[in-house]
Image 1 (tube, rainbow, N blue to C red):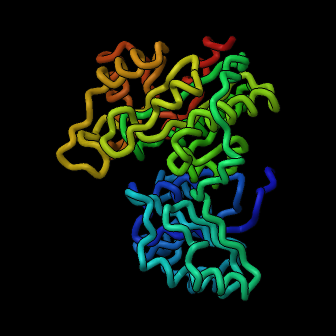
Image 2 (spheres, rainbow, N blue to C red):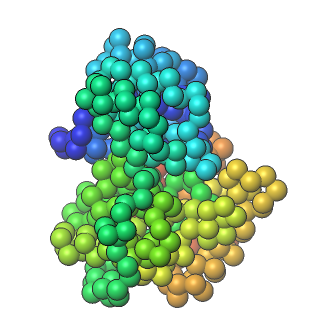
Amino acid sequence: MIKKLDGTALVYADQAFNTLNGKTAHGLVRFTNRYDVVGVIDRNYAGKDAREVLDGIPNGIPVFASIQEALQQVQADYLVIGLAPDGGRLPGSALATIEYALEKGMHVDSGLHDFLSNNEKLVSIAKKNGCRIRDIRKTPNRDDLHFFTGKIEEVDCLKLAILGTDSAIGKRTTAWLIVRGLIKAGLSSQMIGTGQTAWMQGAKYSFVMDSCINDFVSGEIEHAVHEAWKNENPDVIVIEGQGSLMNPAYPGGFEILAAGRPDYVILQHAPKRLEYDGFPGYTLHPLPEQIRAIEIISGKKVIAITVNHEEMVEQEILPACRAITKATGLPAFDVLAFGPEELVELIKKYLK
């Protein structure tokens, strides 16, 4: 059993679980090396098994209607904010739960842009009860940031970037599944986390890209990849993508291509998604067009498509994969539904 980095945790996702605004909670329910998740707070799914709600696979993590109900049944060291709304803002309705957790002596971790450590009332309650508040998205001091140097060229293992055709489309989950699949296949692999959820899941080499000062984003990507290579000597480094190249609000991926300098790209896509997440009227650019954009910008090949099966029943998944292959000439896999083994076999062909 892997020892958790921190301790037991309740994940707050009230009225957001099993929606796109609950993706941090989803990641923690599926996998984390940082916490031992003992429950999720969401009144909409109270009484259910969290992983069964998401994937139809029970894993013993119960959903509670409130923190009061949860703490009558489980013990938790942390309250982790599992919300990931557009703009990263904390709903006012969450404050009462956070205050209650601090009063009960629980630490609080948040990955939102509203910094709890700037709230004097919360800081006072935490201090009174010997608790810690961590704002994962707080920008590090400039002295702790890195500028791009070119040392990325020293990295001689296989580097893969997991990009997406939209935000909130499953890039991080796919990246973790690939890393774990590679390790299971006997290859050493490291995940480069680029968002707050990857840090919360225990990614050893990570930073929060969307809260980093722009001048240092490329340097932080380079530094994380180089440190993982230097310290771990992996066969494969997998870089988690952010946003998508053509997303109107989250045009992520440019810096990962430029500074992370992946050898190849794997592209995550949701066949049933027609518009960019959260932006009605903004039609998702066609998959072949997005592939061409990545290859033109980076000069690197997209070698596979990974499928997000949202809004699909199981019987639709494999036909959707075949349709993608027919349209793009690329193999397509749903690693969440069927596991990463076939994709890992493909990746092994590209090992240096």
